[in-house]
Amino acid sequence: MCHGTSGRHALTIAEGVEEKLARTLGRKPGHVEGRRAAEWILLDYIDFIVHVFTADRRAFYGLERLWGDAPRLELPDEVPKGLARRRRARSPA
Image (cartoon, rainbow, N blue to C red):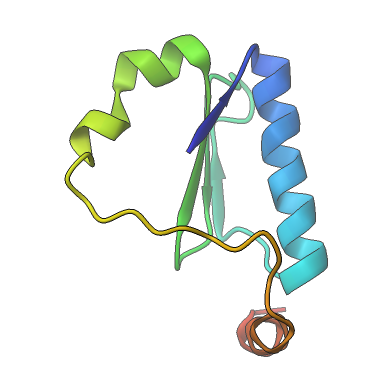
């Protein structure tokens, strides 16, 4: 979950996430919503979801409040090489 300073910025962030996951893990989202308005873009990767908001939409919807008691997972900066290979093998073409 993150936000950009404008719709264009949010769209650029979402595109960057898609490109990075495609390049490093061979993963493409199963479904994408919100590209046109670019106020709340949802990238559904089946195993996980990425939310990219504009700052005002993030504050308005307050998903952190809804999920505030959920455990937080820290993600590594780099994908371990073995995991990247396994994900590519499982990912649909």
